[in-house]
Image 1 (tube, one colour):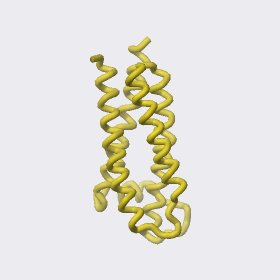
Image 2 (cartoon, helix red, strand yellow):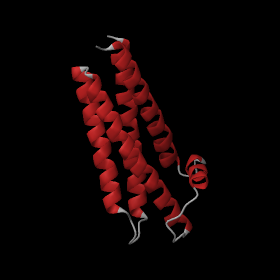
Image 3 (cartoon, one colour):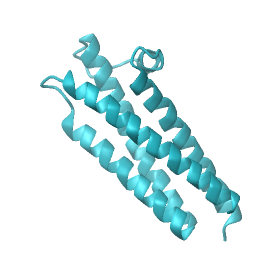
Image 4 (cartoon, helix red, strand yellow):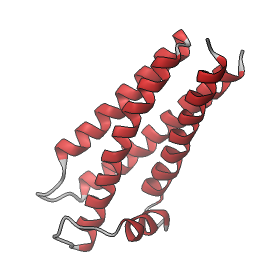
Length: 144
């Protein structure tokens, strides 16, 4: 097994862990949702993350660098939606009507571990994203 394969496998493990934590977070959020629950945004986030994981598995099988970069591009779009969902959840829980949100305050709220599943989802998701980026760069350098 090559180092690229090992790191790509670790990335896949982080993606799966993030998905599990996301399902736990979503189930809790859905129980407390109101009329403003962002169903379409949640569905888009999930679809992008599933697509990215699918591309990542294809990369593990084919070991083609371009597939890894496609997976990375798709997961990045999914992460942006995830951040928007984090803002929406914060606004809903704190009764803030405006679309504006202080990202630092929201990040502190999530990473304060008052809700462990979303905190772990955010942390493990970030680890997966950075690990995927590292694998993409490393694979670009060593795979030809």
